[in-house]
Length: 503
Image (cartoon, rainbow, N blue to C red; front, side, top):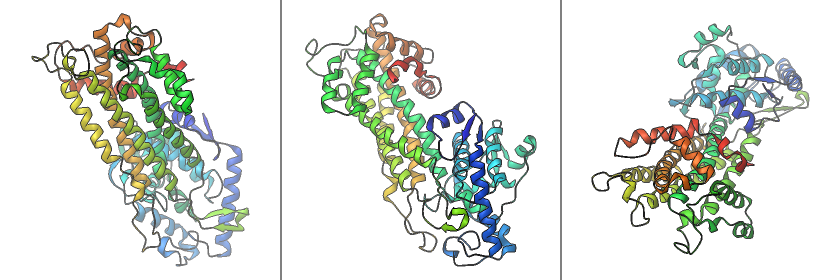
């Protein structure tokens, strides 16, 4: 059970909730803050004070006063009118993450929402009821208004959800779990949708997958080193210490550890003096991607525990401040950086694939083919990898450099962070396919060299991979192999093989 406090949620916690099905609850201290904040809202309504989003309209309508007997209608209208999402839904994991992140933000106690509303969010998480949320339609400022409105609809008994592997009307899933719809009151609709939880949830899932892929990329690169009789000297600790980047030093160490005991690597001067950059510069390039991953992790964990709605309530309601914590710029930048970092893992992987299959660059059978000429071997796999990295270069264009004014120019600068997070997820998927192709080629090359000569760790990785993709003895439909290798990397690759190297 993960206990939400509004202040201490980590990516490790999110991994448990998302991938291990861990349930969630809230701390007693957080409930006390929620109740105090709610009393402040009720007092504001009772006193008839003019406070944005509580007794006024929204956005450009912030100057329109709302009568007390229309408060519930105002909140319902807000959700209905803002549920303008379009396109395919976010992955179910992302919807689950949104529920958790929205609840955690509200538990900070600055939003004025009732305890029962947050309890409903937690009920949805624990029951596995995940709202269907369209991916497109958010500008990434004023909060992820459209996506979060779709997240809220099922709380009201409307919209659709994913439940027990099926997509259905929310009411059906709620009835099966004995959960009743709620009616939103003052400020609650605004508190639920004014935030960055769509881009952050997408960012969390993307980061967790990217982090795993980064570790896998090193193990795959180590097999490629063996397949190409790469020069181990390039990973000597002395080189990396004198440059000084901790991530570069760490990658070099993991590469040495992966290759310890290998009889397939060489020393400088034995076959050649130095390798091409895609081998020699693995610590420098992968290390730079790790620098970015660490930056992204830091920003996500801050945002996961941030109060991001508007207005925020302080000092028991004596101070209510309209600000802009819903603006997604920090996450927009982080997602754009992540796109570049993961795209580069794929770029350098594709260059290693080329070195594995090109007979002008190695002494292996051309295209790793069993019968070169009669059979094409891995020739077109490299084409597929080249296509994927080219697509990534387009997706890696920063979304955050764009902005379009909205709400009659009241909201005149937006982050496009949700677009950035979605593109980052696409890049991770493409990069995984590229690395799957490298894994297939690296396993083939290493096995041609001789399994008995491999390092213990890389041989374990290869043997694990062979459960999914067999040795290429003749041409076959390699699309199926790529798909199986991709599934291996996404779902079945055990990082426990590399656990000592991760410490």
